[in-house]
Image (cartoon, rainbow, N blue to C red):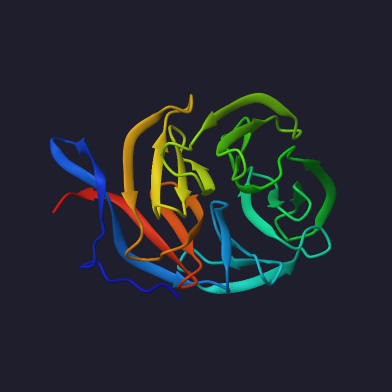
Length: 236
């Protein structure tokens, strides 16, 4: 279940402004336990889904972080690295096969899958029109059609972190999380780094998963095997 301690903050590097009050991305003190090696996380509007890299499963959690159930994905890929939700289906990307696999919300594999065309795909997200996958081998975020066809559009994340493990979309910006710097970085819809970033190192030294829940960002870390919540809050 969720552990909350609102007095604990991790202040981000970048400062925005909301209503004239300086704002920054901060750890809210809210977290919940995940399976071992949580390599990816997504929010489907009702539940969190967390990919278990070593257990080859997808775990489902309530909005309050309570464990509900899980389903096996080992028959498709034994090194799942990311997960996303497009409003109808779940999609899991794996680096054992370098492919993306489609599942129903109940966890049934539909038989639909497609190649990423990369050698080390990590995280995946859906922006409402396209899928985006971060590739650790080329340090880029790559765009795919809804049918899984690479469009040729990509943007580099190497200048911020040469080992990015996940990506998410909040309706306006992309965010990626990197394991070399243990930080989250913000990009425009065109893939331009905005200069906004914040550290998650105080919570976990190997962040692998990243998700947007409609109001806050969540990261999963493999040192502590937990999910942590970050929000834009008034800068202390």
